[in-house]
Image 1 (cartoon, each protein chain N blue to C red):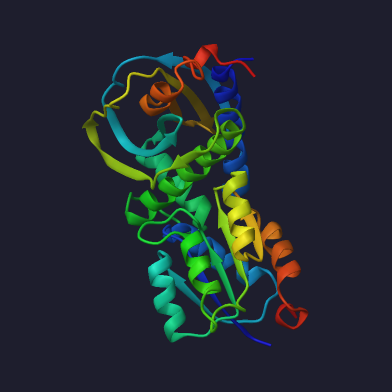
Image 2 (cartoon, rainbow over the protein chains, first blue to last red; image 1 turned 45 degrees about the vertical axis):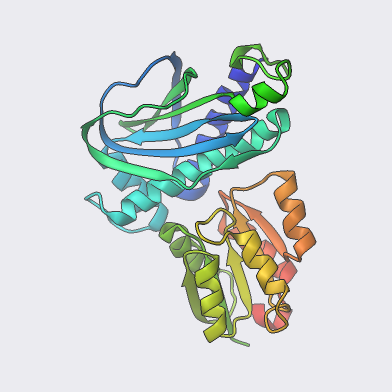
Length: 176
Length: 129
């Protein structure tokens, strides 16, 4: 198995674990896709967390306002029908837990990784761009009739490459 | 014996969940205070004596490890059990927290039972009855 497979497996386990433990619901993973370049324009809620260390990247959760409200309602046991600060905070914490689980799994392979404080965006027709050029690993999940997407990009950081040019390689070339 | 608890997390959602979970543990709780980071937590501790602190690690301004170190370095707060509740599961972070005197470590995501189990191992029986 290579690192890309590990990320996919860890991501899926993390999402299922966080949803079942913190929300008490089951989600069903959909197919995995790999994307290069800037993602399409977003509508809804997008939550981002940075990863840093010898490898650096970003983890994010994107969902519709309906799914964001459902996350908040299940997590906090309150009825929420509109995106507000509490909803954004719940989605941010959900992202923190998912990406944190992935980080903890990958640290065994990649060494210590740091996790940033989450940033959440809510709006219509907005675009995001990561300064890196890494490929995005994207997995869509089904929650009843709703869907949401979790994506991770990760690449050797410039600092690590400069220090140890042979220690790290592209995502699909690092074996376990 | 009724206890006062301080919950420290930059996520209001997690603070709310932990409050709910604490009320389900069987602890006789008088007050649950909240803080959004380590600095706020120290301000609360300056004003209120508490019997237990639950804290996240990754927080702005002052993180949970810095808060733990500050508490263990102050005679008035040294004896308060501090349980880390965090996504940070890296060996180095856990070891650092244990070395600094954390009474327990719970990884997010968590269940109410996991929190309760940890508190049973950390708190005197009188506080749990």
